[in-house]
Image (cartoon, rainbow, N blue to C red):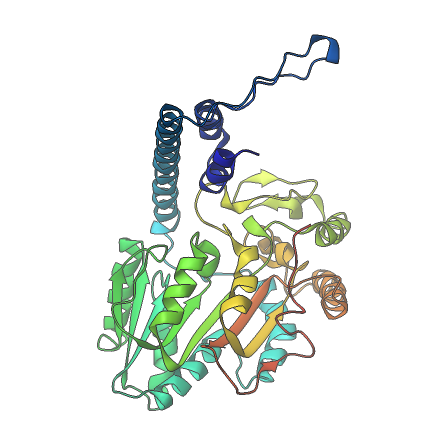
Length: 406
């Protein structure tokens, strides 16, 4: 790989192939790369490789011009693709008034298996997990009102519920800014805050968390199912670290599995094993309107930002923050209880519940043994240095839950 290739590759990694090919020709042509026969030819007919270009001033100027042109072209193409992804992301979520609707079989699973674990953390659901961390941040706040910000808040429904929990506990001395890229969703957030009497606490703000710069310091930052939509995780995590007060908290609930919510090979094999037990009509994907007689390892990140860098979330959090609380869970169970297929299951059917129970048991055994890695995590993170205790479930530390790509 020549020097220009090394510079070009990171810029173009996320581009579609239709743009990669001409840019690759431009970069390699501008760098006067050695000529090679394509496709490979026998040694008898191989063309000689010319000497590399001389390092004259004219040659350097030509190289710089080619480099600049290639970089500009890559930047422009990447910007165009990003703009298209933003447009598609807004389109996908524009009409989703309630993005939290899940099949009844999900609630059977979560109430049976997830809630007892959360209760070990002193809460019954993710909203209370957020509320507990924000309440602790209010108590530690050096000024009043305490300032919070939520990244990728969407309709602000989670934020409003968390604020309602805090208000019910007598905690109202805070402001929670809600940042999202979708203006239609934020309008619904404004209306919801007004309807619930929380307009002074909930402040929706239009913004892109891929380019977010904090306007002030915050006592807590929250991210509910939004980090797996972030392309520039390094930038966002650095901005969050910089804006947190010394005793501030970064509170998350998110997806940490493979990019695009695909399955790692060891999980995919188990999913397909259970898939064979499903009645044929259970294998119809309700969101995509497709029949999946065999389970398709679908990449959800193809159009918008769904799961765009999910597998990078946990390692980057470990790299930059310390953990006050960490709870990771689930893997193989995901496609059976999600929106695509979960609606086929009857939560009152002993047969369907038995299947979910068996999938969960296989999931749990793999997670505890380390042969499977969780696809979900909830965490309270602290700025370094943090010398306090870390609460985890069983032995599932952040490091234990890492899945290193093959």
